[in-house]
Length: 299
Image 1 (tube, helix red, strand yellow):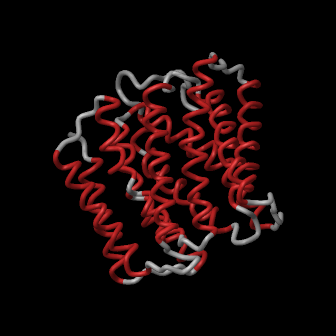
Image 2: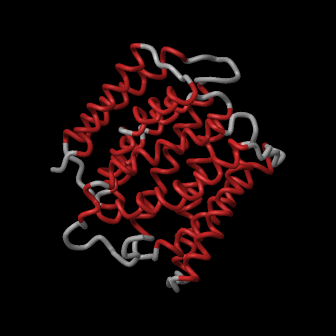
């Protein structure tokens, strides 16, 4: 793990050049992990265990490396950020995929995050958004619509208005969480701050599981593999990388990376699960890929 006390001042480190591509691939596998569960594990119940395991592992790492723990205010900020970035976002994404939302489409809807960030980050963090950022975000919205519309259904499962709406709320949750993280928690040590963040996330999804689920999990090979991958690679690896990128760059630019995730997720979902997209949906993916060049381009 890179210098945990780095606050993002000075020249960006060399690893930052390769970090975006690594992050995009790792983040894509999170949607695949949700799909891999199938009907063997209730999503919010699964995430409750995932976050608690991740918190325990990070607490062990923090103790072994003698990482400094945040004060009371820092711990509260970390709990709130974790509840938004992990609990609200992943809870809704896993829930909708469990209800039949294709992994690639879910990833594309979450690609709305740069639009939401552009609206919220500027007044909160004082970040300036150029005209091409707004143009790119508008084009990205059109691309999302092209992907969702052809297979929109009013059935109980699939690309339904409810699933689309819940996924949008999930995108809003991670957007607010990322901004909150940038504003209040960038000075915290990643090892210990993430312990509190995963505890906060576990609290959010556990409440949802208590209300909507029965903590029913069949520990099949797929579920065990998904748990190991999502805890070690996603919850610890990719999330730490995300926060490091947030520290070294503007939130709106980092958020633009999420436009690259859908194409990566769709490819993996096609290879593993046979998920397919029609020509209009592929065109929508291409539109979003073009939009990201406008969103993440440096001024």
